[in-house]
Amino acid sequence: MPVSSPGEVPTSASLRLRLAALVRAAALATPGVVGLDAGRTGIRMTASDGLRVDGVVCAALPGGRYQVSVHLVAAMVPLRSLADAVRARVERDAANAGLAGRLGPVDVAVEDVSTPAEARL
Amino acid sequence: MSESKSPRTARSGATSEPTEGASAAVSRRGSEPLGSEHGSTTIADAVVTKIASIAAREVRGVYDLGGGTARAIGGMTRSVGIGDERMQGIGVEVGEREAAVDLTVVVEYGESIPQIADSLRANITRRIEGMTGLTVTEVNVAVNDLYFPGDEAAAEPERVE
Image 1 (cartoon, rainbow over the protein chains, first blue to last red):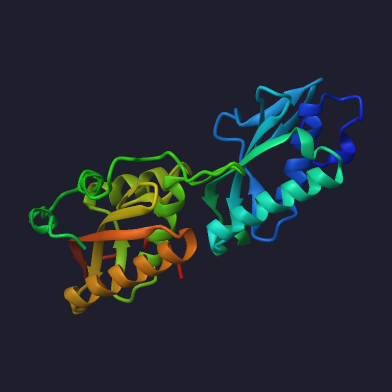
Image 2: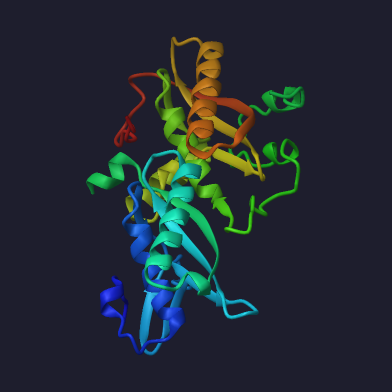
């Protein structure tokens, strides 16, 4: 079952899934992010406990942290600063949720841009 | 713009996607992203392609992108809903900090081709550098066909404003 907000993730769910949901929400809340992209085959996601977070991959690192990669569809805005904004927001939200110690590097990949013509569809 | 583009301007009537030219221009450090302990940022080739395509269509006098075959096949795949005209006629090579673009265009009859080529270089460079922060090392323009107003038989390609 796809998860779209951290509220849908029970606190009993794995840390990996909770982190992924937090990252997804943080990315979607960043102005200039149109959506997340799980890829053509849907493989860029984090799944656990029968739940699934699309567009975010969490992978364990030695030492208990999780490396996060988030795959964006962006609006036509400067993409480097957008990526930095997403990264900053993810780190801030993780800190607010008390997960700063478990968050590793946040890799941001802009997979696609959404043109004004597409946005009208 | 490097000096390596002279042989390519002779590629008249080339209908294949122009990807081979750009590969020489960008050092093949390739796709490993800029990184720090906070994580890396990567920008997919498809993104640069799309930006280049939109920037090219913004230039006055450019009627369409792509060679004859690409446009014919593009029209077919679009009509069955699997084509993406924004990828047509554009080849990009994206490195760590630089990008190179090859494109094939159809221009409107009567327009100055050197002027269009200059405008294409300027606009594509401006858009890619503005949006991605990549430095555009070269934009190679191949003019593949001329468009006369009477040419559109049935389906006129969409213009992206």
